[in-house]
Amino acid sequence: MTSMLHTSFMQESTQMAREHGPVFTREFFNLRFTFVTGADLVAELSDDRRFEKHVLPALEVARPMIGDGLLTAYNHEPNWGKAHDLLMPAFSQAAMRTYHTLMLDVCRQLTDAWDRAAGIEAVHVTDSMAKVTLEIIGRAGFGYSFGSFERTTTHPFVLALEDVLNHGQRLVTRPPMAGGFLGKRAAERNEENIAFLNGVVDEVIAHRAGGDHGSDLLGLMLDSDVLDPVNVRNQVLTFLAAGHETTSAAMSFTLYYLAADPEILEKARAEVDAVIGADEPAFEQVAKLRYLRRVVDESLRLWPTAPGYSRMAKEDTTLGGRYPMPAGEPFFVLLPALHRDFVWGDDPETFDPDRFLPERIRARPAHAFKPFGTGVRACIGRQFALHQIVLVMSRVLQRYNPTLPSDYRLRASEGLTFSPIGLTLDLRPRQDGR
Ligand code: MNH
Image 1: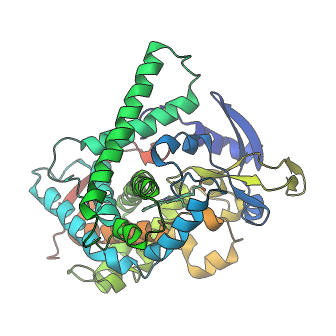
Image 2 (image 1 turned 90 degrees about the vertical axis):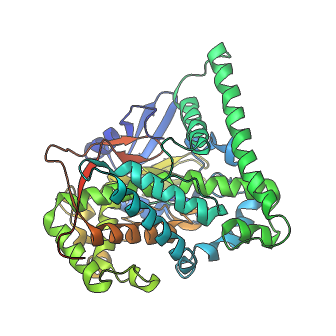
Image 3 (image 1 turned 180 degrees about the horizontal axis):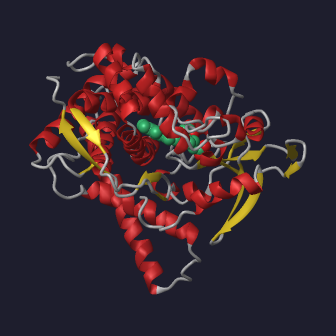
């Protein structure tokens, strides 16, 4: 869902932050963003006693599809707390053991597909990563395989999901089409898409009714009985909408940075060889890939695939003692700018995984790194995303020697997420017998 808007509003705003930060306002079509980019102010905004999540218009327009699902629920909606309490344990680091085997299955599908494909040059890694994350969340979320690696065209479910999200983005970024024919047609089509998505999920749920509910997230929700059926459906669609492209784009950026620097690539590969060897990684080994994890974190620093999140004051206050913040008014944490704040040193554009060495993290102010949002409304899928990203990267490094085409220059598209434009890699099998 990165292709529709043809904009770089967030990237431009990031450039402006050095001069105009730490708080400045910009308009984008009929939207108004007050950006916060300073680490000290973001730290203050992270206080859940004074501030809370604001559901951005860009999220709000997804409510016809995912309603009061975790991502788009208003703070006062009771289903948020019910779903949060129920699902938190299923997203803990320990729970990742449950998904490790299916994640490995999907890695095997990926490497099989790459090995089968005649060409190892100019592999469209962003497409491949999108398939990986879709298969993983489909299976972990509701035991569903989209057959991404067998298909030559995009699954209709995925097309409908992307259509709905794009439709929402157009609604908030363009003036209303004033009931014109095209607007009416687009609205109808959107309703058809939503009905189709609901139908697919409902069918899966119906198959589970009675008997064995299964050990995926859907099974957990059906077993517990605390969420009503519509909310269960909202959660399933939320995992797909929130957990698919953010994660796949993060994998693509990480692959870019690995391939872009032979020294970093070599260090990551040496670690994978030392910790795992040539076999499939065991669950416990993934967390031991400390250097690779730092590469992932550093990629998320420069390209936090979700560009930001929005906060509002619970009561009238001032931010940093000088920026008036009336209750309920949104302030947007612009992550690429926060992640280049002066607390990161004077070379914030330099890719350096060692910024995430434990002692260097401790030396930085808290809240300078927020790719997964903050507080009680932070990303529930964080461990799930990180486990699969590190796992998939390790499988790639075990098998291939990724190199960038010499003329590739990193540029990112933006929509609900950032994603690298036109990234391809040459993936030669490793020659050292691994
Ligand atoms: Mn995720 C919330 C970023 C992967 C499901 N996610 C958020 C927020 C950010 C975010 C930022 C906070 C939004 C806000 O404050 O409005 N999420 C990411 C990134 C990745 C990611 C950068 C991958 C990299 N997210 C995932 C995955 C899943 C997921 C994977 C599900 C399997 N995220 C969510 C849900 C929420 C969320 C659900 C809302 C949590 C809540 O409010 O309770």
